[in-house]
Length: 314
Image (cartoon, rainbow, N blue to C red):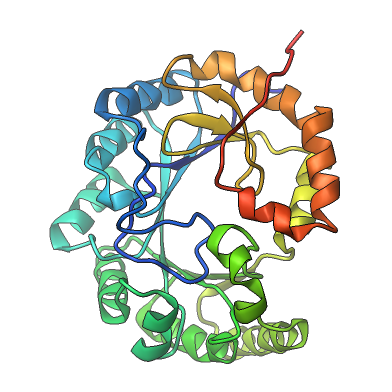
């Protein structure tokens, strides 16, 4: 990351509010979980303009539910006009025909929608407040407009045996990519880990089944993330990505598993914050946290907090 004067990629959690309250949410989002100090419209648009000015190529929007933010469309319009590629991670509830038409006009690069069961009962048990049929309807609307949506499947004890069936459904609906990987042991998912996590053996069986289905059906591209979050932390600590995470209150963080906040983008520029991200990765505090988290997974329950970290960029 030291080769670049700005991140190549920015992950932006627009809001922590969400209609759902998913059991395995790594951000602990929900209808009543909007942060009191979330960025306002002008602060969001200022950051969007800085992203364009810094030549950042790609921004991924998550949350909470990014489409529920009152600022989402002017942010998208600012970035799209500046040539920035946009990815959206959404439950699909806000993607009606008009919204999908706007996304097509902006040439949105990627829309990911989660489907976590072969039927409504399983999906909605894991994702209370979300909708199974509305998610598929949104996928159908995106496919109709040539936007090639991606489907995200998060394996848990409740649904891991549904993985192949959901892949088969995705193949029938024209989904571009089937994205999956181990459940992230963060936030609400970390607190419910013992009750919710599937076994390594069940996950291995699901992966074998998915690979067989992909080879047979010639359906969506199969994208299986190879690591759990603890291995991810070790890998990134050794070789950080050229990216920054912006959480709903404008704090700049390193990775969704790490609670450290190194800058406040309400008060300072992205240009001044970026060197602090690199310095933070090399800091004793971050390296010690990553090391300890390998044997102390309870540390991962702090992922969504903002711990101030002062670093020197000299």
